[in-house]
Image (cartoon, rainbow, N blue to C red):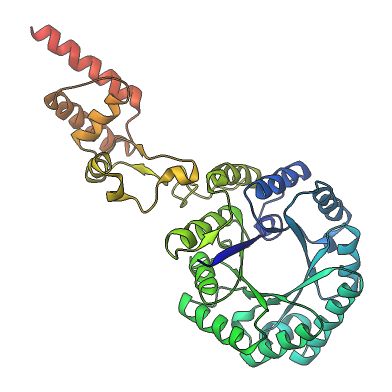
Length: 380
């Protein structure tokens, strides 16, 4: 089974999400949790942002985590100097590779852009750093140019390259084709990383498609936070790679929820209760048909056991509940009711849910049960 490696960029691209600003204490805690989860590498910031950012990155480096650390840098010698001052040995050096970005942002031709990148990468290598190369807007770049760039940098000793779908220009089929074409044209020991954004909701799908096509590294963020609509969510990529692609991943799945809760709280953003894997409702069921099936055989309505990610199924009562769900909730409290009583309680559950447009609190169900029992006693 192919093993997936994660380069998590929560502390760089995740923090670029509008309005997100992690404190140093939060950054340190996130870095520790990423490492505890078994993430192979984390991109921890942009040294060129200033002294405070450099000091934050240096503080993370001083933790001495077993996880590899990387900084993000433009293709300038000054950025490399700032990166080196942080004590983080891996320097990711990036430049646009599409004509529209090279010309529009930097006013450069493709050849001028490649030479600029080459100078910065060579400088980083001379400083004793491990350099990876970022190809911004790869999805809109000419494939011949990408191939030429990778081969040129490879000759200088670069082995790691990031294919970035910066503006979500790919669907999964295109991603697979482009990754396969590029890898077929470059030396076999090139390690390709896939970095996807989520403007069409396809970041995780595109990332998985790229890995299946031969890329080695998945660039992710916790809960998918990031620029605009975010990045590929680490927990989604890791779980889908394991269960849908039959691959391996070294991440501690049981720690994902705690990591996500911490990052979401620190970001101050609401990623939604229905967020896959880590959302509050990810394993919550109301429908009577689903609840009945799960109580009989869990495999009827699950692709994987929630226990893998340290969670469990939760049943709630609402408009679509059945009497079996009502009985089950009460059984969890050690209370048994007749089918007739469960049916009467279900009527009240549905009336409440439709009127309030919400689930029924358990305390309310218990109150209704007491009323039913009192009514039964008075009738005797």
